[in-house]
Length: 94
Length: 307
Image 1 (cartoon, chains in turn yellow, cyan):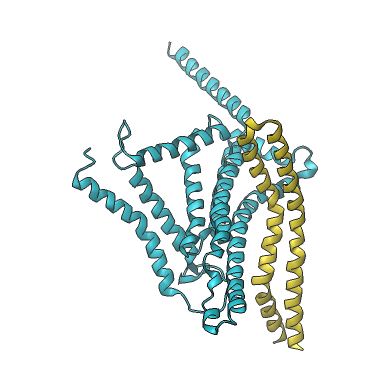
Image 2 (cartoon, each protein chain N blue to C red):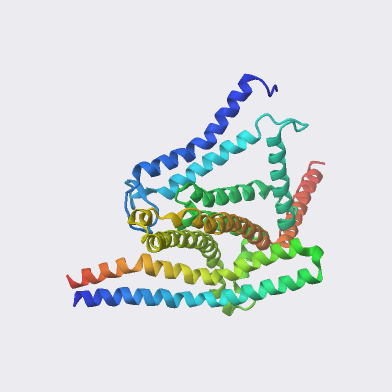
């Protein structure tokens, strides 16, 4: 019975980590749009390449934040959460 | 100052040693306390020792040791670069130092405006600390920026600066800014204010940590792959893990050098944007003019009384 419970905890953590990484879709689309528009702008006005590039990188990194929240949660679910949940389970069984 | 004298060269050597020794000490500490293991294990920073404290024990971890070593190295590097500076540059290192200072001053001036030009050393300092901390993973050290505690400390410092410069426009203005555009949005504004340090620290730490995890996983994958591909020749060649030579370095080029440098730049840029963006310029100037007018009126009244 205990093995089953621990198995459910580990499986749930793994599935949760996978679901958390769905957050990567949004920043991917957003950054792709930003880079496409930056390429268009550079093509239209090659002289402002430096300004456009630095603004684009700043914007990309800010857009990346939501994806990184998902990444941090996935990392926590894989490396930190299972141990803690199993400890809580073992304490409650006693 | 005579740059060819023996004393000058001795001080040079001492400063260079001061820059290199903390890093070498951190590497030695890591080598001496490393736990040998054949499996890949992805763990946080290793705890070197604990100091008992009233509320909870203070942990001295690898991240803190490496970041202190990086700070010492930056200090001695700066002293080395500014050693023996002259009005007319006569050494390469002075040219490099002047180039760095000029670039940094320009960046702060274009991003933050005239009022914040004193911020250049702080921005340069946080950029150098962040970049060299991330690059320390190239030497096999634990990069301090992949520990949330270190980065959160920087982010809280920046948050304090943001709040300080927002308060320059007056407490009432600061409090009122939370109830804008409609008072109904008050909880949302408080959350978004608190999200600033969280997002800054998570962004920096998430990037560096994910890079080091992917590097560790790929190194393990290459070990398995070389065993699979070359193991049929003889088990000895398979166990040599030949594919691990060189190939992970290409990934390290992106994850360690490019990502680390970019995150340092981003952290500095966001600091500049948040601090100068939160500063109410017109309000501050209006308040200053009002205060000066009041002072002047008081002085004139005093003079009139004396006369």
